[in-house]
Image (cartoon, rainbow, N blue to C red):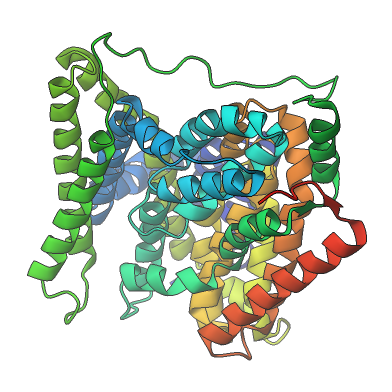
Length: 507
């Protein structure tokens, strides 16, 4: 294979720089692909442009694996739209809010509800915020605190679930690199093994109940809580609260029930595991095609069940219900294009020898123990600048996996560091879609949400970075998790003691 040297790193570098400058991942990935194809065709742009479509995009779209992932992503989008628009998810959330009569219970209730709505970070923001708003207002919990809980239980939860949109996207990126480097482990097994190493996501989910139990806040969040407690004002004078707008218009005879979400999701699980078991799980290696088949079949049956129940309970007409389903598919077109462009950039980088060249540059200069923390930091920077963890994962995994294997850094923590870094930056970014939706769901001023959330995000991010640093020396997963938990509890207690304000002393 011809060696392209420094030129080989330009396509992903251009994608990263443009993503930072334009805040548009799709345009950035496309430009990186175009530049890479131009290099392959000796700078002949007239040959490169048609080849970009003929030899790259068309080829990636026609690939059997890629096509199966695209179909799965579209089916997920359709079902998510139905279960959120049917009122079923709202009925489930409302049932969880009964008997909540204290700040602690309200925070823990919103936390549990956010975890329960694991299938979509968008659905989380659209449901948890509006449902808990009247409760938190009554109990004098700031809108900033509610927005933080919503944000902290959206992307971090979805990134831990293999059959969520985040999980499917992540596994699709892993699968490509596994195939490229002939690894024996499956994408499913790889993702499952990364879960206990996703230190930022796990730490963020731990911090919410810890703050709720302590009843103490610090930084801008403490000031927001004091404002509500002393004055009863939900917003600062300068605030410009956001909102989600009106919910979907349902039939006047509609009777939303929890069954509209419970039965479809139950069907997804039953069918998914039934197909896996029929193919030898857990005694045989779990093949990617069986996972995608099980999930696609499960989501297909799930949306049919939800569709039928919506008609039975007169939620909406046949035509409107089907339009909702198609609308959900359209909402996931961004993910489809991001995947297609990410696969294409990965294939270009392979032809150019990007990963071997980067490994050659850093080999002997970068200690193996720095690989995982490095990708956590870089992932956080890219995700913060672009507002998307999807694009960050797509850009970094094709570089992180070969670097980890060649330099001797533990593979699973490195992949997990890319995931967690993407979520960390996304969590802090004011242009992130989930951050915006969390502000909207909690009807909170967006800048205030970002400002009050940042100290908590940086607290967990700093601890996560430190744990990734020691992950090369501590082989026990349980020991690393113990280090993470102890560090978060101790640092939170210290910060609460030094700068904390008691704002939730009720039971």
